Length: 231
Image (cartoon, rainbow, N blue to C red):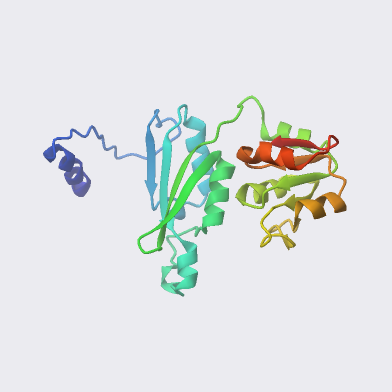
């Protein structure tokens, strides 16, 4: 704690008054105010339930702060055979894809993930996802499962998550040829081109995981029988 107090005083020497209060106590859901920034470095890999931790933070946020996390990169460990980086204090190791899915499930939109410290660590920048608190996940799931043939547009992190949540997803559509004719992890749902998806299935709903592409997708599909919505 003496080192932290010392660092806090550094801005004062430079003419900047830092109003920082250090509390020696455990974090609880009642402690969070309305911050502009939430920074958490090298904590999440030590938690047995990282999703619960993130969900508590998301539930208490009333404004739109920047979220900053830092954690080791599992890719670097594998690429460098750094077996010595596996030790008992770390309950979790995250790839870029898995940390993105974790934040998405907790209610955050990941803005950017940047490798740091010569690629050993990763910096995650996110903001709270905007959603209607009056609509539950179960309500959304029940509404979507009224459709018999669902396709998801986009084989990224959000698409993978939706595939593992819904029962009536027939395929995932992705314009990236390197992803086509492959399969979604765990669910095994095929990834197809738009042409092949339309030929193989009588789709009645296409879920576009990124709202920025909704207009573009609607322009590509000229079929009134297919409902196209964004998640």
